[in-house]
Length: 491
Figure 1 (cartoon, rainbow, N blue to C red):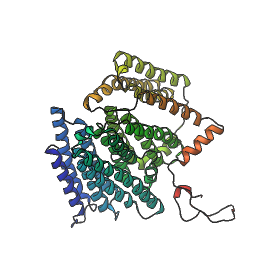
Figure 2: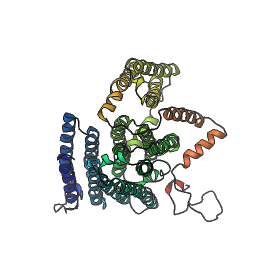
Figure 3: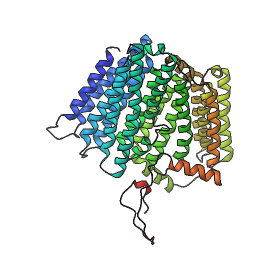
Figure 4: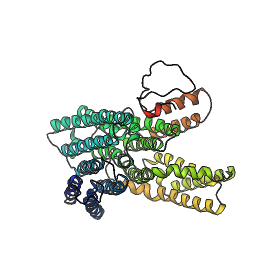
């Protein structure tokens, strides 16, 4: 742990203290004084990343540390305006700073005990953050589900820590590589359980959709920073010599990615779609970690965090934007333009893949998912009703970004994260997952028994069970039951 990491942690602890200080002048949102120490922590984390790049020492950890601290500072600045007048604002600033303390401690830790301690501080703080959403039924469901799933993951991590320390006689992360096969399998499975729980993936996926009831700043922190920690844990424990954990992680990620993608399409609300989008992205992240592609996972985690934070912080204007779109005249879509747009991206990606040598990379199969996303975007742009010049400009930018990702970002990511999994799952797993995901997406869009069942499965994915209702006689206006999650009430 470098000197900059303790300085960053100290600044975040100061943010916790500042959030609890009373504002005598009453000119600020209670607790918003925490934004200043958080900004100082961001400076320390930035210097830490620059130092890591200069010395080529734990660049992944330094990048994730800066991501967590910077997102906390940005979201707190946003909350200092949006939470004005909210009686729970002081709790938000204190708990968000404390969650950042736990995350940074886990990132900077070089031994398993300190990592587990920071991990648990982050978990408990986040559960408390979810509870700041109020006393309604949705918040109670979110808190109970989060507590059960996340604390179960923490218990698995502490069990793995106890086993590792007891058998190796050391708390060092490097000592994990000396575990015998039986102990390695046990530790690997327990660590995988902790990562799956934190990522909100199957079978511990129920807590993440329930947190849609949380306030926008809490949701931004959850989806942009908290859930990404599973990749860090798997990176730090990559030296465990067992294939069991990677298989568990890859299977959980694959199932979550496929079903959560379909579930996202069934949600009519903005935050619900964003929640399931996060679950699907975390499924891909776990799949990449299971294959040992930690560099791809790191780039994906950072990109997803920045993108999802902006979406959640802008969720309040999404309804207004949708109303404007509906009020505007709809332009005719071009089928020929959609085909040309998709073909341009697909051909560029294939040529770049061969010419750059990225096809020989061990994790090249993961580019199937990026390629499918880029091709779909190309079809949307090419088929839109925008002027031809605007579509051409957007397609040119998309093609350039696709080529840059394949030729530069993808191979450079693995260079930034030199850690290699001791026994990863085979790359063919990703190819099978891609085929299943594509087939299920096509089937869900069709009418018929299979499509209906897929829709029902996706619609119920991660939702609380239906509340019991007393027998009643339906009329033209039957009031909904007064308890249970709002999403199940009939109006």
